[in-house]
Length: 156
Image (tube, rainbow, N blue to C red; front, side, top):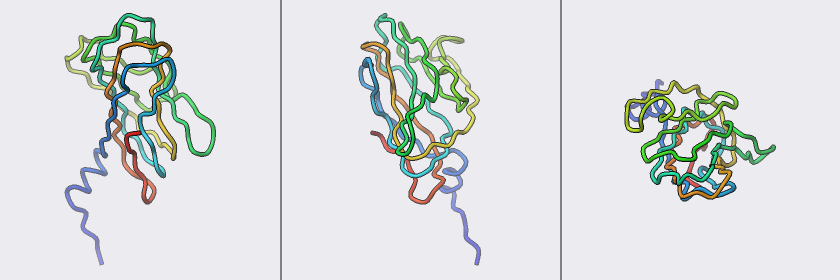
């Protein structure tokens, strides 16, 4: 007996499922973004600045704290001191590179085409980690495909 894969399932496999969470004002420390259950294939993690950074010397990075094992940086710290509304950050799955920043190559709001590399994540949490308190707020989006039964990503 064959199983028919329906349109929604094809889109999930090809593109992934999107979950989003706002960082709130950046703190000097970690803010939980996503809770991962099981094993997921992360297609991309994208951030969109919704409140401008206020000029305080600040860097951001993303970390993963797995349920089993030790927390690790999933990208190196990137300076975001005066990033404007509309700046886009993306984590491309490379180990660990800085976040790509749209305003580093083009003005916010212009075309920005990262080429993400997939990365596997196990159960745990993903954090937005700042080096100083700042008004800057980022809306983060995680695009993923479940790998293990019952796997998923939820806003923390």
